Structure formats: C-alpha cells, structure tokens
Amino acid sequence: MNIDVSTIFQIAGIGIIVAMIHTVLKQMNKEDMAHWVTVIGFVVVLFMVVRLLNDLFQEIKTIFLFQ
Image (cartoon, rainbow, N blue to C red; front, side, top):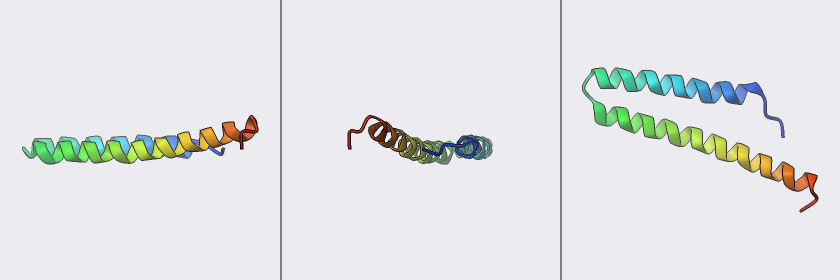
C-alpha cells in the first residue's frame, strides 16, 4: 500500500476548490447549483477514500494470509 502525501493534498485541493465555487455561486444567488457542486465534490472525495480503504483491506488480507 503506497499511500503518500499527494493523495491527502488532492483531497484538500478538491475541498478548497469546491468551497471556492460554492462561495461564488452563493454570492450569485444560485444556491441550488452551489449545493450540487458541494454534493458532487463530496462524492468524488468519497470514491477516493473508498479506493484507499479497499487498498488498506487488501494489504491487511495479505499480511494475515487470508487470500
């Protein structure tokens, strides 16, 4: 399992970009679109975390020889 700092920076970058887009859309009185951007950003990060958890569980399986 090769988790490095770049994945954490990617998640943080997505969070910052989504927050900026959300703020801009909210200032333009487009709250519906701002909420959709937030939901889509959350789903993207959730898929990244699920993939990392899958790698973690695969690594645990190989360590304890449950293959």
